[in-house]
Image (cartoon, rainbow, N blue to C red):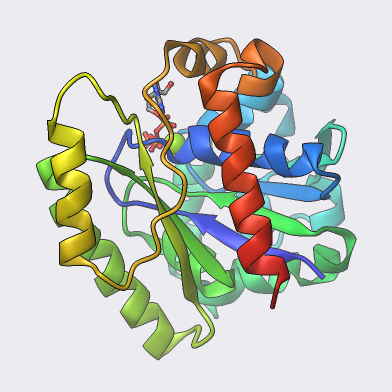
Length: 257
Ligand code: ATP
Ligand code: MG
């Protein structure tokens, strides 16, 4: 039965999509079956994996799944060995209004995914940088939240918003939600600032588990732009090693239960 993980941070550009994509590959490399779900109307994750083919799935994507126009089986696309995706689509933001006005709107994703959970080890959901109905659906469906974080002043302060949202979700729709960890991203040793922020983070949120830090990496950015995972682009580099280590940590935490 799959463990469901939301990769979330309401702040934009912190590395949610990069983390989702590369963690999926690292888990797949370790033989885990991964289902990706892209609930971001920007469809960056989908585009990264299938490119312009994203346009072909107008009638079968995460939006039509949430409005019950599609069956879940019809929305799943195999993209790599052990990696499948339920794609996002250009029309997802239009669907948002329809979903907001529908019955049981917070549980649409949970209900839709239920039949396929036995087919996977992990479901990883990539979320938009906003606190809307898509993020609420993701968190309601998830066992865990994984938070990528940029080590800037506002990045660290902004974590409180995520914690507030998690608290609300736990009270209202999903008691079982836990924080899997925070993943500091774009870490650089060239200035002292990130290190100071890391200390600040530890002091401000002493109970939040800190996972492997992902380095600032040109290779990661280039891979992203070319629709490749870091393992396909620069498999021996620092960033690939960091994601392999992160996958090990995730497996350790999730599978020891
Ligand atoms: P959004 O909130 O818009 O969905 P996001 O949180 O998903 O953004 P990404 O799209 O993953 O963030 O990353 C934003 C940009 O930063 C991308 O260009 C990506 O290639 C780059 N990036 C992410 N992580 C790193 C890293 N560790 N080193 C270098 N570049 C990175
Ligand atoms: Mg993104």
